[in-house]
Amino acid sequence: MVKSDETLFAIIEQLRESDGAGVTELAKQLDMAKSSIHKHLHTMVKHGYVVKRNDTYHIGLQFLNFGEYVRDSYDIYHASKSKIHELAERTGEMVWLIIPENGLGWFLYGEKGDSGISEESIVGSWTYLHNNSGGKAILANLPSEQIDNIIDQHGLPTKTENTITDLNTLRTELENIRERGYAVNQGEDIAGIHAVGVPLISDGEIQGALSIAGAAHRFKRDQREQKLAEYLITAADDIEVNLAYQ
Image (cartoon, rainbow, N blue to C red; front, side):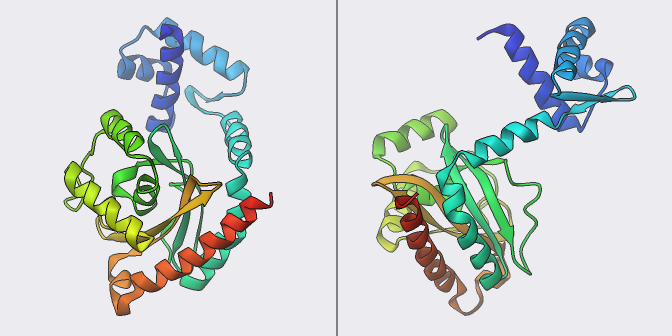
């Protein structure tokens, strides 16, 4: 790896984590020389990737430009938007489009209904595939060798007491998902939040997943999980048709 690149990315990630920082603070947090930090910041300010407000540096809007470009490049994003809106209105819950990349699940787009949890801080973030309903729906539709590679790379980290951390248990769960056509997340990622997810497949390959998430007590009421799965499967069929004609 190129050391200067590693330094650059470390600064960017620390600026985000700290919600802005000064040169001295960054140098202390990253255990780097202030002169090196300052040079990198100066370059990023010049190109719009970092902005300086008083003596504090923040992530710049240039990243938003690139983020919007990346999202817009996915056909599945355009094919899914209207269906996600319909599901959010129909269920009142949070609806997500999740895309696999480098063995992780990325929240590409989401809309919330009247009762939905906020999506603003989650869009653009990632999750492990094994503790998320959409992620498990993706894993269940990957070849065994690829599943093994993902687990070798990322492991099965614990997020809550309900997270599946045993490989054999996960394999059984993935087989059940294949049989019933949808995945569930019962507080495995965030305590108190349940979710249902289905795969999005085009030309025989997994493209992503569609999921509905909400408070656990609402998902347990009157077999709502099954009804939400039916809504998702119908929407997924429509999205796959949209993808075929794009």
